[in-house]
Image 1 (tube, rainbow, N blue to C red):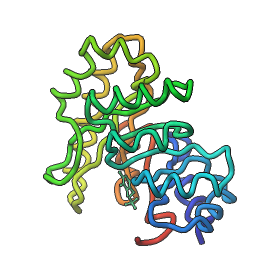
Image 2: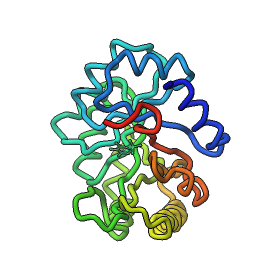
Image 3: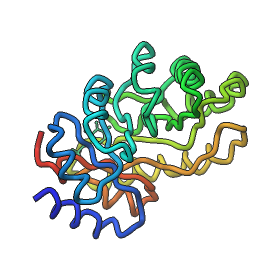
Image 4: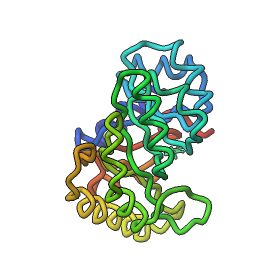
Length: 218
Ligand SMILES: *Cc1c(COP(=O)(O)O)cnc(C)c1O
């Protein structure tokens, strides 16, 4: 079933975006099934869950953190995380830089942007993101690289609203991507989940984060 779902979703994506299989709350056996069906990029929203699963699965998996990250937990994922998609402050970037340096690596990050109408969703406002990308202190962070933006659309049946939110994020991505700094190199726009990834791809997503459409409801 998982393999069928992945095949169907990949056919629909048709190489226009990367598929991140969102594996939160799912047991390692199902992650292995997704791996065997060809998935190599997994997204988790909790540090502890990612750290528990990572050593039990093949080493060539790219682990993406997609949930809110507290500074005191960065150290646990710094040795292996491929992309932190949920960066929302300079303070967090400074801690990621510190832990990346300890592990002698450069950690790729996305800035999470608040585009939804819901109050509960995390993320920076457009102005805040622009401010952060223009902050001179970024130049001191040689062990982080900001490679783009991530956002969640409002959870609604109104496809028009979802499309407008994704379009707004793409416009911001294009504008902020023109900022030239040594560790700002935009190449990923992470938007789209199980219910809206097709719209997200039409609006320029390069990376979709799909959970329930692969693994079933949580
Ligand atoms: C859970 C989650 C997803 C996947 O949601 P589905 O609707 O199950 O595809 C994507 N992005 C983030 C940030 C999530 O927390």
